[in-house]
Length: 313
Image (cartoon, rainbow, N blue to C red; front, side, top):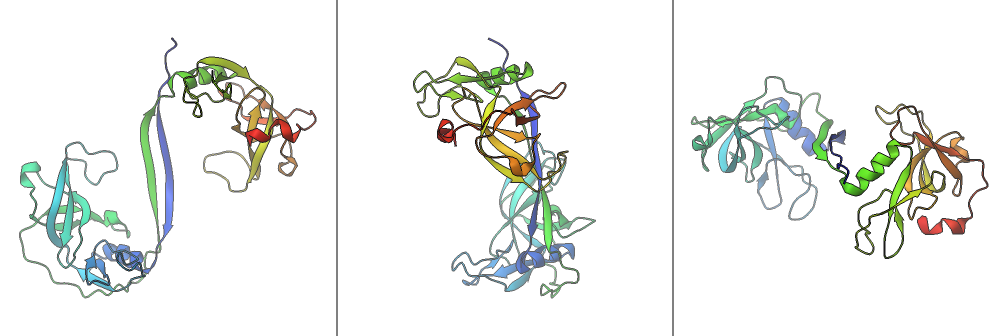
């Protein structure tokens, strides 16, 4: 049996969010070393603040300042910090109820070891040296046995308020496509497309899954399909993707390769975007050293009859 492929993969994208008045005041307050919560209809002060009342679901805006000191309500020790976490040395993840708040805030607690942490211990915020209006303006919490500090009197009105944030979402993992898709990828290296046929319903899956999702039985009969196919549905892309050297607008389509039981994705080229249509017959275009088709172009054949691909929409 050929070796099953595996490779490290990273899924990463920036998540941009605009802020309403409550979250704007909270994050701008952190920039100014002030912690603001919001008072709910039942009188509780929520930190971090919610934009809508958890009891009535109504919008709430009654901002309340709380102190940067508080009490650990529960915690867990992190022996091996990961990339991007608040501290590079072992620390505790802790829920801290700040003085004046009725809910707890999750953040890192810098302590010399798990024996130095306990529920009920007093802590305070250690502010980041450079603050921009983000939760990372709280560098971490640290043990504290002093008096409760005075409030600043902040009401949530700040100059140059933070109105939006960009959070980098990232997932690092090792992906193994399994036996069926390993064979599919290896075949693409030879400019061939192979699927697997279900022994029960006889549908040919491309890319293969190793099992038929309809019948629930294993598939192992390999079937070469294509290389030509038919556009079943498509969309016109008008927003340029980062790090993708393709000028907009362009067309991305579902293409049913000849002999396949379902359609796969592919970009359509070699034709004006507004001339792409359902039923268009296409063929793959490979680039030198490419491991998969760069795009599909029209073959010049007459369009396929709708009845030949309607089950593949």
